Image 1 (tube, helix red, strand yellow):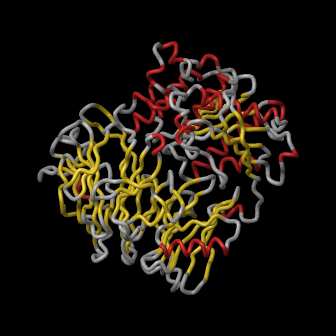
Image 2 (cartoon, rainbow, N blue to C red):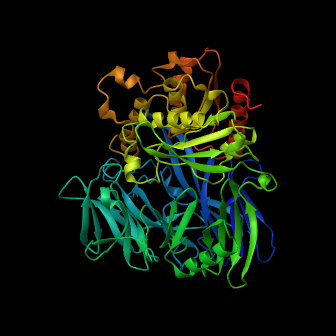
Length: 620
């Protein structure tokens, strides 16, 4: 289980569950012992979360993959849907169902506390009365003047909506108070080709409109009446509180602590910011709300060496659902009743490991060949220490690439450790969580120094005498899948087999799949560094497809058919080049997306991975 969510009274608890191997929602009456409810999501949707707008209704966020014929050809879309589930009637309906193919109907900006039958949703919709269905552009202007951001009062039982305000074609985003009143907007500037942040009829700031923003509004802090914004400007990197009176900014602080780079935590009922969350190997929270801050401190004392995070609470904050993390172990979940002073465990992320030892996870600092300091995580076989080496070894670079591996429970690395492998996870340059300079060091190094860092981690493990036979297999997903394939080219003598799951295989085709002015397009362009390559020969150096003829190691390629992050065409490009080579195997994961979200898909990935390793790099 995961994602525990308490109802407004605290009497009911909804969780992500998978009794049939597929993501579902289970609802428990934790006070009165009433009937539990099981809500299957089905094969069409991917479950993304849930929360309670009222005691009788649960909103379940899902996404749906679809391929549609549009004016400029067949295109694949991911539709973000919100399902309202009435627990009394046991009936479900899509919010804003009458609008047809809207890309996103999940943006509930107010739970309307005085109206338990409705919520306020913001979405891009047609402003004209006719033809309300169809696919709207998510970029104002490209969908024509008939498309604009607007707010809608949506009935939780019928899913039908009534427009309450059209924000206008210049509006790009908006933020609201607890009652659904607009407090700030980002609009296209009438004076420049950029954007402006507007509040109270005044322009607070003008900034660039280009995709990956160096300035972003993250939310509204109702307690201070200020906006929480993110700046990515050199020494000014981090979170700030912005005055809506004059636009002045001050670093976000909680007590004497500078929040730095973090994500805001929202109250699911008020939609207001109550704290901040960061990651230092495990998730760490800091609360500005005094009740939640006191509860967290009390629980941290009770649970000792476990990292406590507050995940959900009832409207009175008298009952709180929490997670407790510890290094290398599955996350545990509890409900804390503040009034009764009682703490009860409700489940675990992986209950099958409750009585089973997991591998020790340790962090080491490794210097790269050009002197950069890099954190490398080692997951050892259960019951083993580094003194028991050497071990058959697997390198597992993470995806992203602006992400990082942590110290918590990792289903893939722990599964391989249980087979007897040492799993090595390098947080190479370009990873998040180590500061702006370390992240920026990865820009333009997609197939260059980022791959060298992975190789340097492998070389360090060998030098430490931890890798049996002085070699390893390389396994990864997404960017990690690409890194695996590139290690087979740049680190050929030591990389004896390669596994790529939903990996990039042709970086320049990956960039071409997105508008370079979009956030996604600029993200890929920053890391790949398009301007650094002046010829096809230079571009071929970082392309597994272009260099497919150089592979002489066994290669396993796994790919989902509904991947919209790394399109399935990327896998098919390499498959067509490697088909027939000794040791090559390509396996479709069926109607799976990029994230390997279901236990059925993960089991298939593990089965294929372990069988491939047994054949090419056995642990025993």
